[in-house]
Image 1 (cartoon, rainbow, N blue to C red):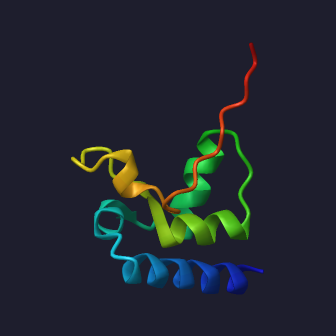
Image 2 (cartoon, one colour; image 1 turned 60 degrees about the vertical axis):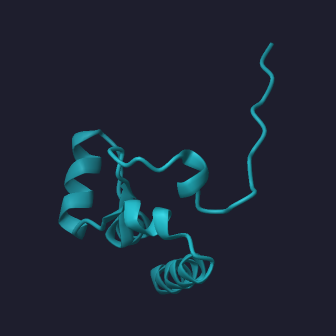
Image 3 (cartoon, rainbow, N blue to C red; image 1 turned 90 degrees about the vertical axis):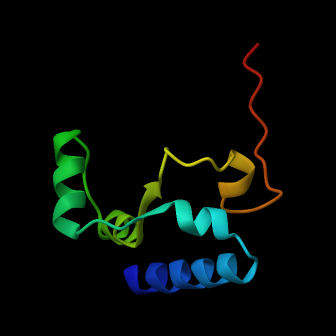
Length: 87
């Protein structure tokens, strides 16, 4: 399964580059080692999986000290999930 995930992440990254999502690509942080992922999840009391290690090995989120707006860095342009109304 992690091979499929790795392939999918590579396809997503290529597509984002092709779409000119430069602000997003610049703001994505480098991935973590599998040991670092396991350590961070363990310290938070969370289990690890190969998929999580693969995902966070690819990229470790986005930098928060960037001038880019959320519109510049969301992964899928034009897709916004509605917030549920708990009112």
